[in-house]
Length: 256
Image: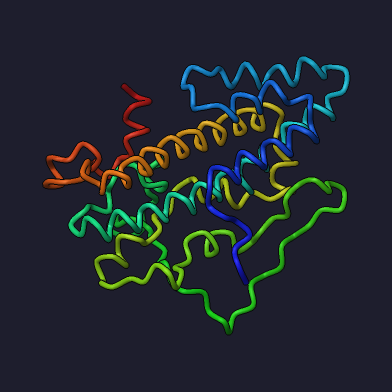
């Protein structure tokens, strides 16, 4: 089954434009999403405007915020994760000694989940099996404009593809998916989000929007590096500014 995602920023921007046409009340939120990333954007304030502008219709404001949440988790994040992984592959093929802790990876945005003996939880990236029928997407007739929930979203995003063969075990290891809180965003269901308080919904919308913007920014940096044959990633791991310790650099920056 082919992936429903093209893995491009253009696909995400097109999706945002369509979303804006369906929900013009959210134009003040979608307009900055269409522009270059601006770290000064006050996303909590912009999201609270949705609540204040629909104070007499709280059900409407909640519906709008839920739709924005699922736009990000079911379309924008998947598109940029695929794009990021495509560039990861090119980086690891070109720079064979590049660390799997390269800071611009999509799974370095959040802390790695740990299993026994403090080893990171990883998921192998493999070719999809023709013998396995993926679970069907879960549609909601009451929300026709909302992308259906895909229970197999993670295998879809991290699957190896025939045009990106893993020529070595090291390349295969580097392309493994590190489990983080980002996974939980991708697996949010309608029922779970519907059970949240208004405050939790608003906070999560802000979180996923910021995560997507960071991912977009990182992926654009990787695309620039690709043009320069990844010269920025040359040298030893302990001397490269783009190789970090196991705590993702975004979390360290937030605490600085």
